[in-house]
Structure formats: structure tokens, C-alpha cells
Length: 94
Image 1: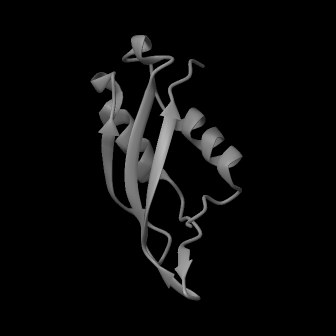
Image 2 (image 1 turned 30 degrees about the vertical axis):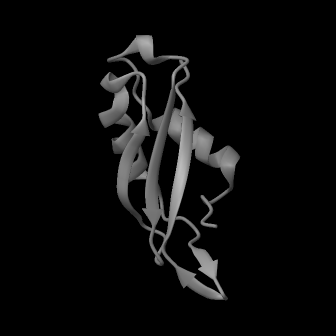
């Protein structure tokens, strides 16, 4: 599976640092499910919101996903390949 540089803890830190929730404080505590593809070069492609109970923050979540640094791409049968990745984000207050 693809991996964020530094692992899941650093992924969470990255999201918390870059996510601007000022426009929608009511989203705090909500879980946003999103999906994207990590291509063979580690880049992010086709980010989409899969499920959200707080649509006012969806565009901001997609913006942060697109800001992510290159990931370590996934491998299949020893070959580096693009793979889908599902991410659940708990929107936390700062």
C-alpha cells in the first residue's frame, strides 16, 4: 500500500496543520471520508469526497489533499504501481 512520508502520525499532523476550519466551525467532530489515487511517482490524483455530513468543508479537505507531498508509492508483485487510497479524516478544532 502507498505510505505518507513519516507514516500515519505525520499524515494526521500534515492535515491538522494545513486544514483551515475557520469557515465552518460546526464541522469540528465530523468525519470526512475521501479517496484518491497515489500514482507510481507518489503524486496524488483524482481526490474525491466519498462521504461527508458537513459539505461546507469538502472543498477545503480536497485542497489539503492536493497539497500533500509525494507519497511512497505502492507495489504489486515487486513493481511500483498507482493505487487507490481511502482516508477518513476527523475534523478537529485548533
